[in-house]
Length: 212
Image 1 (cartoon, rainbow, N blue to C red):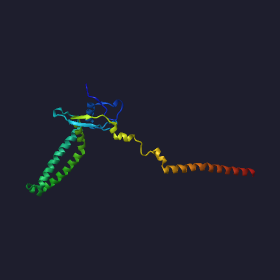
Image 2 (tube, helix red, strand yellow; image 1 turned 135 degrees about the horizontal axis):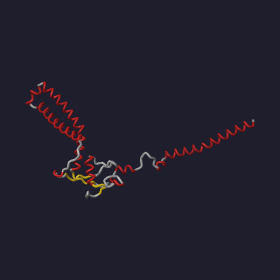
Image 3 (cartoon, one colour; image 1 turned 45 degrees about the vertical axis):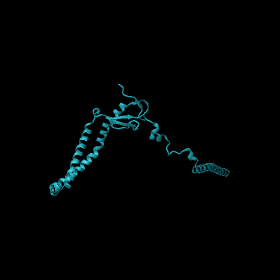
Image 4 (cartoon, helix red, strand yellow; image 1 turned 30 degrees about the vertical axis):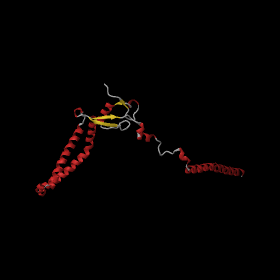
């Protein structure tokens, strides 16, 4: 079946360089990421518009993700209801008797603790639910995936430049490198003379011993 034109959406080369746009969008919806897992390049995509509700498609959700979504939804509902009741009970003139009752004061503490638990639950599981939402959004939006443009790839261009830690040949012409080179050259020229003088001294010692 016809699956659209071939695209070159990332830095990959060879047999994995080209892909169909529909296949790429389906893979993105299953993985929930807009980054190539081979070259780690983030695809350039443009959101056109949302599909009609009759065209919305479902996505594959695991059991763990379903539990996380239910936990976030129930935690959010409980948090909203609890905070609403606490604010009403704290400021409403019709709840003066509640504020004076010892049982309601204990309930205030319990509800406050449960609110903190719900906030922690939403923060902990919210990232997973957001990834599910991004996958759903990737399926139910009309997207336009752009081809890879090396001219606009700043990371790739920076990677191709020589490292700043390497010494550039032109740096050797600086005065500090010239002075070091001259001193090294003089030291190398002085060493043979010292070696020859040591050889001559040892030769004289041998001659004297022989003559004696």
